[in-house]
Image (tube, helix red, strand yellow):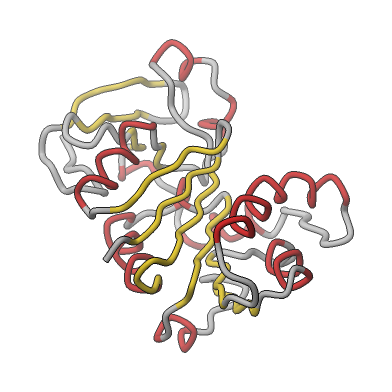
Length: 212
């Protein structure tokens, strides 16, 4: 069995298998993850992302992202500084937050690879539909915590695992760029380990405040 890519535990076991991939679960942090041997290579992965049509003028897309924008704006001070991590080819959440008076910077490994923004700290960091794509979530999670100032916020949007029965018919796992799947228990594990305040907003928005 493979070690967990999030907590590095070697207590992992078979969770589910479909015609494309095998999924493992970590007994320590409850992460469900694709067998690392079955991940896409970087070129194929980017080709998938190039098909995404994220248009900042699309009202439906804005409504979707408002599920992150509204709770973040309710919790941070006016004119805060934020980073949209994994903003994709058509940054939209950052524009919505700028419209609310915040200063935003962008980072995306493929579309905005400006590493200089990763040397700063921010009042808040957002990562919408990002975490499920990470091949090295342990490293990126620590990077996010380092990017957030004390008392700052980390906002994550991702759909979460419920149980193996629901997972069997879950469309979310069928995207071959989705390689790790969090549950509430996974976020609770991280919040306790890293001393973060944790809030779940609806079904797919997770807010964590850095308390030190």
